[in-house]
Length: 160
Image (tube, rainbow, N blue to C red):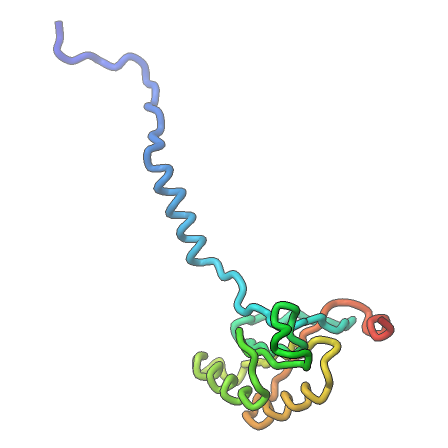
């Protein structure tokens, strides 16, 4: 009798699944950290006007958003007059210059000339507020402005 026995057959051993939960939780943690949900919570009504020639902007990290419109139903205590929202808070038109300066400070030096201000304005908002916003943007030399719209027929949306 020999002390050592030869294996009978060349079957591969079963794959161990002991580390599978570790791998699953590592992937879950990675996607939780790496996923960007939503940058801003809208506190205003934002029914965008329609336009038939819409173009999507490529570099989203070079965009600064300014929202304007009436406060939404959750924020009726703020009144019914159209307001400006910068990031996640209501702001006055005079605070736009500081907002633009803060956005420029958070970007690299070579990206600053390519920063674009996006005005996301509710279609029921008074044009006087939009004009005031544009005046403040001129003061801080933020002259690249885009208007956020939705795809649709512009003429048909005027009749609604």
